[in-house]
Amino acid sequence: MVHSSPTVNILEVLRVSPPPSDSVTLPLTFFDLGWLKLHPVDRLLFYRVPELTRSVLVSKLKSSLSATLRHYLPLAGRLVWNPTDTKPSIVYSPDEKDAVYVMVAESNGDLSSLTGDVPRTATEFHPLVPELPVSNESAPVLAVQITFFPNQGFSLGVTAHHAVLDGKTTAMFLKAWAHNCKQEQDHPLPHDLTPSMDRTVVRDPTGLETKLLNRWMSASDNKPSLKLFPSKEIGADIVRVTYRLTRENIQKLRERVEAESRTGAELRLSTFVITYAYVITCLVKARGGDPTRRVCIGFASDFRSRLNPPLPSTYFGNCIVGAGDFDAKAEPILEEEEEEGKGFISAVESLSGWVNGLCPENIEKNMLSPFEAFKRMEPGRQMISVAGSTRLGIYGSDFGWGKPVKVEIVTIDKDMSVSLSESGDGTGGVEIGLCLTKDDVERFGSLFSLGLKLK
Image 1 (cartoon, rainbow, N blue to C red):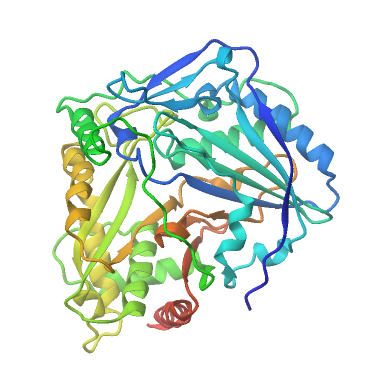
Image 2 (image 1 turned 180 degrees about the vertical axis):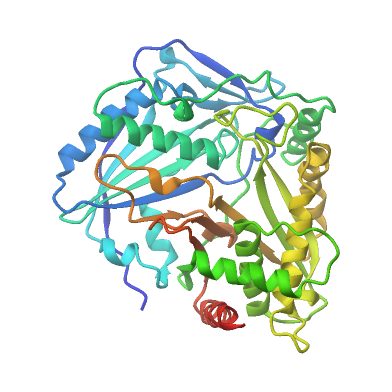
């Protein structure tokens, strides 16, 4: 059942600044530049706290955000690309009165229906996340929205500029903010939540930064511009739905691959590979169509530990590299033959190969290839990509009122990507978020259930 849209009213807009601090300028690295014009990532965390009052909620979140920004100063700043600068920088300046804008809102919506797994209208999540206004020369790094649901709880919407921080940095910031709010005192942050701002650790021996800048410049009439690529309108027929794989489901799928794969190569059978390959299989089969058609399949991988020397695990910024195949064939996945699960085995073998190919030597190829690939793609090609990760521990964001009851990545409806996170119940399973048409949800859901019943 799809519910009608609730009303969300903005009550006030707060400017939250860090404690008195020096100004900071951080240059973007090539890892950041790869995401310069992609839409921001909107995360939405829901908390069930029926006894909470709005004044207590806003007061605690505001003071703890300010304390946390002391350690995350760039988040209170702006991404700036002046016409005279060769590349954009992140600038925080107290003289410019830089701050994070926090929208305070109230909703008459039903928290239980919003946090369910069943299909929900995708657009009803949009009023719960703030927008980042982007001009040619400037963009805020972060925006926050606190939405109070009287006698139910609240949601925390966080919109982050993708050229400034990746999922790992966003999760680290959210957990640091939650830590400070729960402690109710400005203690030093634990080491694993204290960001490392040193940019000199990122080396660029092949001039990838310049190559990326040239490509972005050519996409905007050879002028410096931070303007984002336009996002498509989301129709009323798009619904958001959550599927789950338990630890036991994942293990059974893993055992199926081990028993049936005929490739001689050593397969990477991580939770990510098994889960994403299973979702890819169901999405390609749900679309059906001509088996000779091509599918664009992508994902991004954290490179902090893959570099030589590795970066600190707490490195602030982007350190992810995209991988996959823009021209994957649908045929091996659509093939049925006698073995029902053969398409899934094929997807695992392909995905495992792409993951095994993640190495520093391939960074430049992986970061430049999308520019050419998107130019030659035919309209309507099926695009499958992934946001989030099962390793971010986003459900650990406890602000003192318990863990979130549900986390959503709202952005996935813009490009029909897949969101992945660890299961909120701590049992080692995976939550899979999708935005599809109602008809596609029916087809995907039946394939998803059927595949788990195969022996």
